[in-house]
Length: 102
Ligand SMILES: [Ca+2]
Image (cartoon, rainbow, N blue to C red; front, top):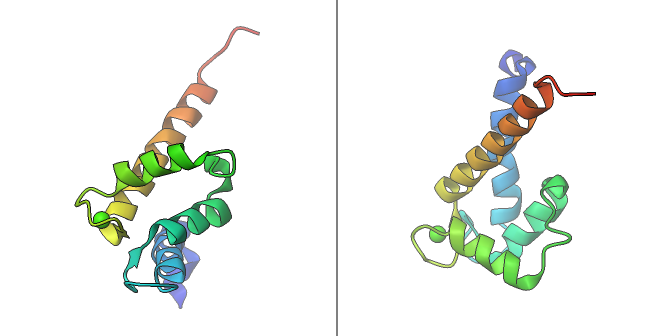
């Protein structure tokens, strides 16, 4: 597939395929359960720090992501979360590029 040569398209495809890699494990095939979300975060987004997250923090994160309160994270909720993470990265890079006193 020629289109896969473009990094941004590749990144979007990875976003989608990563969701399905975990959402299909148990329960609703198209939603992430709490356990699936936890596994996805710790394996695919280790920089996010879920390893150091305690149960309460993880529950709060899950609660924040689960906008429609069905106790699962659907693709839309996951996509919103990744957009938030991307915005966090953006701020990080922007701050890192700012001239700093040495
Ligand atoms: Ca939900």
